[in-house]
Length: 379
Ligand code: AQP
Image (cartoon, rainbow, N blue to C red; front, side, top):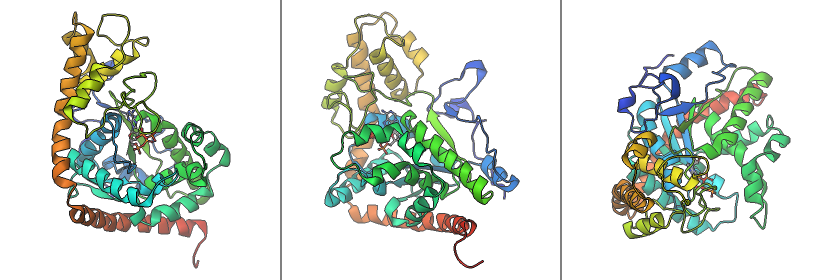
């Protein structure tokens, strides 16, 4: 059942707020991993996949969302809600229990995160927006998919290695995190997964799980594609620009929070680590400046080449001040809208509950297919 096309590869780059031009005259603001375009799908599923993307992504309820989350993921969600048919976004509270946590705080941070996403521009009328734990199909699908997930693959996941090194109790949930992530996406036959660059390995694994399921049980699941922004796929820590900006692993001074006050943002960007040179240009040995150029380009809706031209001959001090003002302007509307939305938990709850109902209606028949293919229930 082909669905109407709403943008995609052929969309006008001028309409994109993300616009990086690809070499060779390409016009995408985004890179899609297309090396294998749905090799294992039946014609019917292929036709569904190419007509309009089914977009799915999830984000953890840490409440302390940072500029990396915003640039790498959240702005993609807002853009994706008009291309996706449907676009599905969830707050992944089941993922959050894979490390030590407090139940009461989990609820609070979930509302914080919901309010941030709505403040950023997610519109429950234009997307399906819900809380992961409200849709039990995610948990069931995790167990079903674990049958086609290899232990060796899970053991190779760098996020598991990094995070398990920091835990007192290394939970089985932390090990299973990528299977749950695969279940999230595959339960909707999503075709496109907008994420930051750090999720590349997890998306590769979910693609492998889908392929293996189809080989073992017949064509059932869609092999999704990863969608990462052309600029800003990996925002780096301002103090340690060799490491990504991160909720758990970064420095406090090097992590700009979405809800941070302008003065704090100015201070953090003003003290961002650079290098001993003088030129505002991107280079492998200039990780700090390269990061600031990317941040400025995204915040001002420009591109890195134009930023280099704009600041030719300028000193690092002036450039850092300009980046700070750009980030303050970029995040201020989100912070202001958040302050209006966050206090009304009943309204947030109503939005999440309505989204969960729609999500369940989408996932239930697909999980039923998976069960049936795997030999559950009467013949
Ligand atoms: N530094 C980053 N640059 C670009 N994108 C990023 N993302 C995370 N860090 C960067 C993207 O944000 C989305 C949501 O992430 P999450 O909240 O579910 O947690 P995460 O991926 O584990 O990243 P965090 O927030 O930094 O947490 P920790 O410290 O736990 O790793 C994802 O799409 C991610 O790619």
